[in-house]
Amino acid sequence: MWATTESVISADGTRILFHTLGDGPPLVILHGALVRVENYLPMAEMLAGDYRVVVVGRRDYAPSGNGSGPRTFARQVEDLGAVLELQGGPSFVFGHSAGGLVALEALAADIPNIRRFALYEAPLVFAGGPLRATLERARELVADDPGEAVVEFFKAILDQPVPEGMLGKMGAAMADRAAGLIADLECITAMDPDSGRWGAMNTPALLLAGTASDRYGPASMETLDAALPDSRFVSLPGLTHSPDDFTPVANILREFFQ
Image (cartoon, rainbow, N blue to C red; front, side):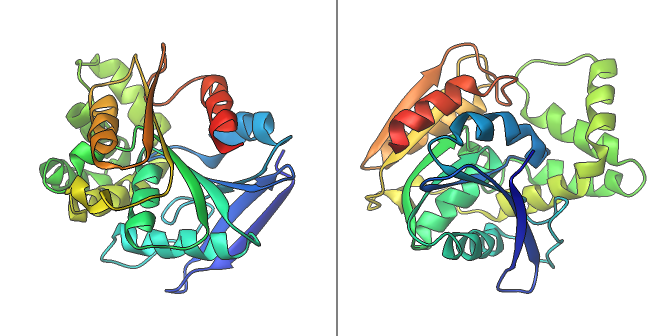
């Protein structure tokens, strides 16, 4: 169980909840699209002996509030800034998938209090136009069948076709997070895809990808590794985009953030 659950009011009035576990330097975690914050509890438990792990519920995902439109990562950067301000000093930041894009935009916006950051497959290759058609189709579907909106997303990003029955089960299991997915797609399609924006950034970065992931994850990390002046790219054997076991990720985060 989480040690505490707290909240902060972001710049636009949206309430952002976050869970903490452990004691030590703060390590703030930003979750991916369609992922529940509870999925990170096992990793938080692994790291809690060395860090105060802070898992943020991003806006448009329960239990945090829903922001108003237009939805952009700039609003989520404000949310992260509000959480960081409460930590009492510089924090480490780990962003998984879409959460990693929030971390990148925070660095581009020169948000203070980020000591080092690590990303796991932040999907930079989708920034800008690639998912606009997917967003429009998901918007059409979400009101009547949110599970189908989720399926539409997976069809757009996965390398290999997935049997319809399996896709349907995935969509049904994540249907309650479809509104958050739509918000993330709006943010991603509004994002500037130019990786050169981080070329002058000196914050040390760890870039992670799984060898069993769909190509967009590793390709995004390779693109960033080429752009960032102080980065290290590591491929983790056998891991997918959403690892069943975050142990290898926790181990390398501990090494990098020490």
